Length: 275
Image (cartoon, rainbow, N blue to C red):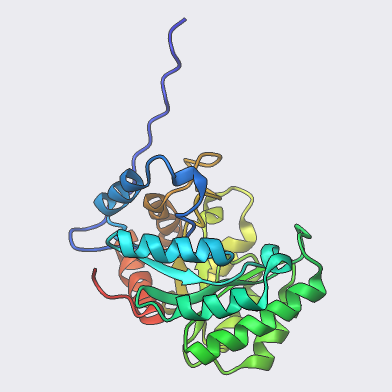
């Protein structure tokens, strides 16, 4: 018996001159360590020329800024994910404030609450989320919000802290259309991950159908949550094309239109320029 042949897959293609933005990826994580330059080259060749790489604690926020300095088309967000709040100190916040002033930093996050994993008590998550929402507002940076099974609490905190002149995004959106409408009322975008390509994602399909294009972003959340046909593999920025293609299918429009509109949204929220 010979070696098993690898399954081939073909990326969707964009019209000449069009681009997508991967608005949420973790390029500093170990799964990219061996071939990040190639990952980004594939992404750019496929029409995904800009990526926002996301901090989840002080160390990864430093790494995000360093990668944004090193690679064309990469921008950074800094912040502390709810999984990591228990090990975060006042000194860490002082350095995050300094990092946030870097010209390649376009957002504050990912921050929020997580009711699934339980890496930190919810009370502590709440305290750090509130603190970071206030810091992001002070720094005039858009928020990138993580929310898993804490919809009501996260929404209540955001409503209490509103308004948000710099805007924000509910990343890897996992709520229903009602939650989507509520966050849009706060001026937030709704970001769609590769989960939208899964067969069991009916609620997310309803969200995509309900949310107007001018409030949508697309993301990989790489290296996690690779879309079909790469489900179970390492995710990477080029694969956001599959997510955008599914959004186009649900909305009954072309992939090119999704690219035009979501890229314009990303440029508006993050102040992204051509790089």
